[in-house]
Structures are given as C-alpha cells and as structure tokens.
Length: 73
Image (cartoon, rainbow, N blue to C red; front, side, top):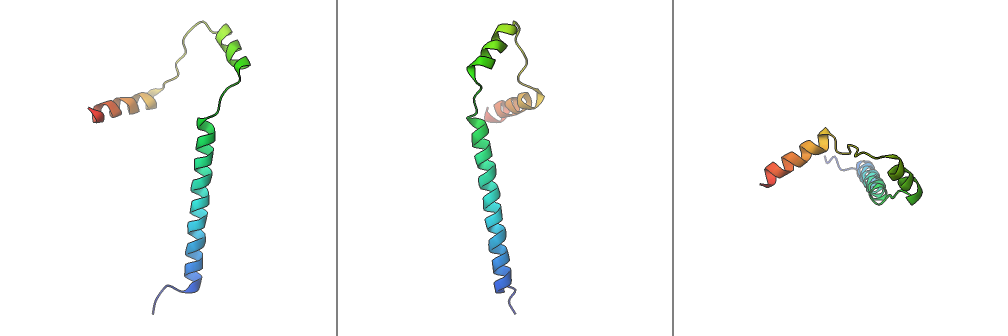
C-alpha cells in the first residue's frame, strides 16, 4: 500500500504553494525596505540640528564584519 493518496498529494501541493507565497511575501517586503528612501526635508532638518556623529553600527554588525574579514582572509 502506498501512502501517496490524492488527498495527501493535494495537501502537499497546498503546503508548497503556501510556502511559495510566504517566500514571495518576505522577498517583496525585503526589497521594499531595501529601496526605501527618506524625504529630503526631514534629512535636512536632521543635518541642521545635529553637530555630532552618531553611532549607526552596533555590536552585531561589527561582529559580522569582523567574522567576514577573518573568514575572507
């Protein structure tokens, strides 16, 4: 007896379709955030009010950069 019944095949096809939809949704969201830009007005106000450099790289990205440099060496 085989476990590949039409019900199992339909259920597996649905789960593959659901996974494909999730991957597409995550990819679309990632690409939208990747190309997101700030308007010039708020940027100009931010530039005018801040006279110091701010920290934008935290511990996790610094660790990743260090590991990447070590592995790539």
